[in-house]
Image 1 (cartoon, rainbow, N blue to C red):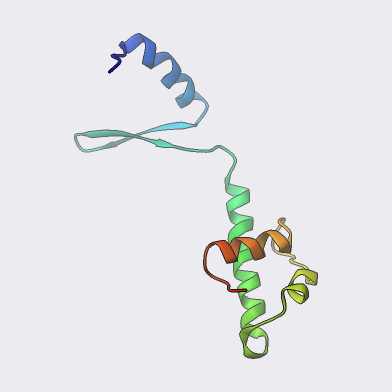
Image 2 (spheres, rainbow, N blue to C red):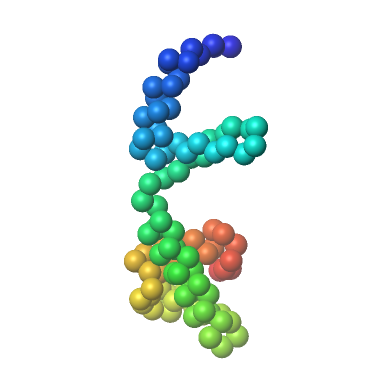
Length: 98
């Protein structure tokens, strides 16, 4: 097992904290760290809006189903991501079945 000295660990950690990747989290006596990705908020917002838009399209269709080819042709105005991405995201998260 390797032993790390404080100077070896503190310099890289402070660089990560400065760039917003490593976020200190103090809960009572426990000190822990969160990892963050700066600038990911617009992607997450687009993903969530696109997911709900595709799910609404399916709910409004007859029998709550559409052909995948019909769904891929439709346009999403609420998301910057394309329909193909959202279809695979919904299938991967078990919110949609083929």
